[in-house]
Amino acid sequence: MRLLGGKEQYVLGEEQRDMREAEKRKPVNVYAPVSSMTDVTITHTERTVLADARAAAIVVYLPDGKQYLPVMVKKVDSTANAVTIVPKGRATIEGASSLALTAEGAAVLLLSDGTDWHKFSEVAGS
Image (tube, rainbow, N blue to C red):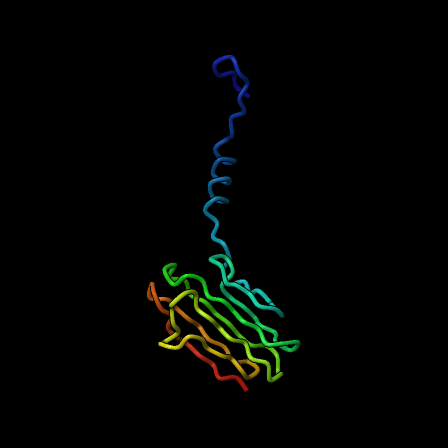
């Protein structure tokens, strides 16, 4: 502790300061999957969805394409219920207004060009 201007102030040691700075720079794990059995809106911190549509069909809403975010969605159940991916506003997914995953294991990696979404990888499922 140090007296500065008549007030007591705590002064961090160099090692403590370095640890706090490193903690601030620590990246958010955006690829940690979110499991969902209901409709879900993808955010900048949650971009991987494991969609379980065994109870009912699910809609996955994409964020604004201006964020240039990669998004991964996978259907993890074996029912006939679809997992439908819908972009925000007037954006499209390769010209379409939505994309449906209908088979167990079906998955897609989407990337935005700033306006619309493009499939960079797609797995048909079983």
